Every structure is written in structure tokens, then in C-alpha cells.
Image (cartoon, rainbow, N blue to C red; front, side):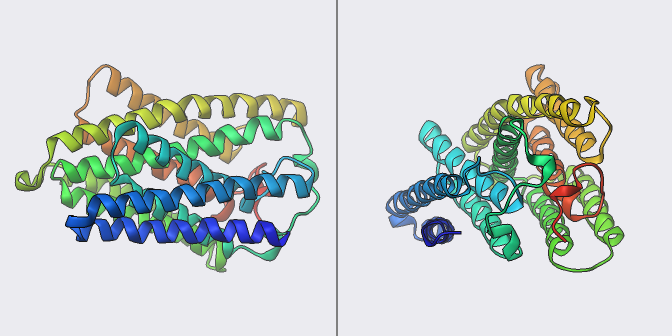
Amino acid sequence: MSDLQVALTNTAGITSVVSFWVFVASNGLRQRRDFLIRIASGVLVVGFAALTVAIIARGIEAERFPLANLYESLLWFAWATMGGYLYISRAYGIKQLGWLASLTAATFFLYGSWLPQSQHDIAPLVPALVSYWRQIHVPPLIVSYAMFFLSGLSGLLQLFSAGRRQTVLASTLTIALALSAIAMGTFTSIDVHWLQLLFIGGSVVGMFLSFFLLKNRDAAKENAKMAETYDDISYRCIAIGFPLLTIGIITGGLWANHAWGSYWSWDPKESMALVTWLSYAAYIHLRVYREMKAEKLALVAVVGLILTLLTYLGFNTLGFGGLHSYGQFK
């Protein structure tokens, strides 16, 4: 990897961290909030531009589409998260989502920086990835994952604005447990069955608890206008991510038929992608036909975030195996 790529990628990572802390500071320094938010957003724009150039430079150096391993997919995920937030903030004029978006980008930058050097180096493609279908199938999936993350984060802010602070705490801890399982599955030799139990068991218990706590409402801290705004943002993110996930699943089936002679083989990662798709299809149905209140829909978006995390990273780090196991590196 060239020095230019390293410098640009490090710039993007550092700016996401700086942007996060400036966003956080804006909540404490209310008199300078607008100024600090503009600074934080400007820093994030610099990081987004640097990451865009880094991805292009990596593609030129590799002489291929730069999306072939976990490290490169993390760069794309961070790029889509940063870009998605910048678009949303401009369209809605909201800023509080910024510190969560920049924190997400910084977390995935850090995760990528800790991967083995073999992931960072530009290497020949494994045979399973030598196909024109790679650049058709993978980018829509990665961008959809980023939009689903933004939707889930907006759901947390909707719940916070609606006075459901206990539910937000339970959901945040659940997401943290899921991320911890992913991290341990990547960097430790802990038995994968324990990690699978931590991810799946912790997610099920945590989300049941979140739904149970939904009845506890702090009316004094409720901001109905902001809750409505974040509810709409969550829906709009899903409205962008859902068709992209659909395209990714369809093109994946076409690629599978080209490579393995079958459109669908019930591979674990394929099946999990279908479960994730069904969860967002349910969200859209419940939203359109107004069969569920906004707070419950926000939790459905959080559940979708966890399912997305399992689909994107879980099946390559928690030992579920399958035809997509070439995504593993240990």
C-alpha cells in the first residue's frame, strides 16, 4: 500500500475521531453549539474527501475495483456512513446524528487498522472473487449496510427524544455486546460457540428488555418535534438501503448461479441476508400501514441494525462457515 493511501486513510480516520469529539463538545458548550457543529461537520467533510481519494488511489494501484477483502469493505462502509450523514444533515438541518455517525466511522476505522497486515496489503484476488459480478454485487450491499446503521442510530435518537431513556440504554448495551462479540471473534481465539451465544443470546435478551422498557417514559425530557424528525430520518435511510439490499441479493443469486450453478444454496450468509431483508420489509409494511407506533418502529430499526451487523461481519468472524467463508482471514 502506497504512502499516499496510508496518509489519506489515516487522515480520514483521524478526522472522524476529531469530528466526534467536537460534536460531543457542542452538547456541553451550548453558547458555542452552532459554531462547534459547523466545525465538526467541516472536519467530517475533509475526512470524507480524503477517504474518497484513498479508495480511488487504492483502485488505481491495485488495477482492480477496490472492494475485495474485509479491510477494503470497511473503508467503503465508513465512506458510505460519512457521506450518508452529510447528505442527511444537509437535507434535514439536524446535527445530533453527527456524533453517532462519526463515532461509527471512527470505530470501523479502528477495527480495520487492527486487522492483519495481509488485509491492508494489495494482493491478487482469490479465485472465488475473480468475476465482474464482484463490483456489481458488493457495493450496493455495503452502502445498504451503512444506511441501515444510520437508520438504527436515528432510531436510538428518536427514542431518546421521545423520553424513552431506559430503552435507549438497554439497546445501546445490546449493540455494544454484539460489537464485542465481533471484536473477540476477530482478534482472539475464544471458542466461537461462546461468541455466538454472546451475540445471539445477548441480542435476543437485550431487545426483549428494550421492548419491555418502552412503557417507561420520561415526559419531562420529551421533545416531540425532534422525535418526529428522527423517525422520518430512520425511515428515509431504510427507503434508500432496502432497494440496495434487494439489488445485492438478486445480483448475488446471479453470481452464485454463474459460479456454482445454483441461484440459492441456503448458505448461512445468504440466509441471514434474507432474514435482514425480511426485517426491513416488515418495517416498511408496519410503517406504511401505520400498524405500529413510532417508538416501536424505532426499536425495529435497532433490531435491523443488529441483524445487519450479523450479516455483514458476524458470519465471517463468529465461525458460522458456509460458502462465504473466504471472507475469513484467521
